[in-house]
Amino acid sequence: MALDRIREVVRQKPWIGWAVVGGLCLIAAAAVAIQFTGGPPDNASLANEVTIRYEDTGTEVKIPRGRVEQTIWDRPLPLDPAQGLENPDTKKLTGFYPDRDDWKKMVEDIAEQRKR
Image 1 (spheres, rainbow, N blue to C red):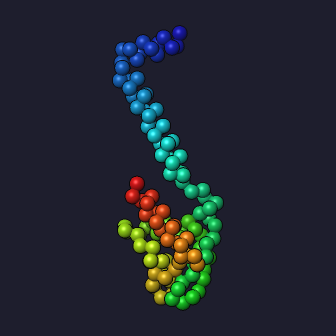
Image 2: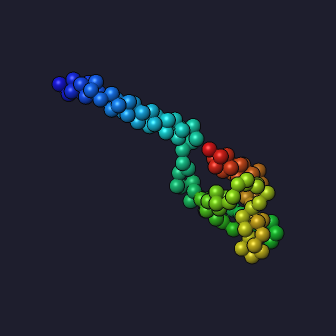
Image 3: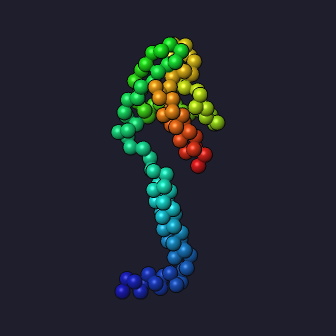
């Protein structure tokens, strides 16, 4: 039978059994990590347009959330919630969500994810 052959191979070469167990442990660890970190964001939410208000000029623009988050991800650590997106007119970092608490939470979440 097939199970007898597998049992015999594992008995002769125990490292095969340990390799299979190790692989299963890695898969289980990855599944648990994805479950507890919430997994990657879905593409639809990253495509949603968010409003960015430039505080130095008062202008507002709509930008895909994914581009906003990528800009923050590309910045060197430590991330500072007091620095917004660059205003293309003045080159100052004054672009924020209209609700600064939402901006602060988003930047802190990205900083936390980058520490892992």
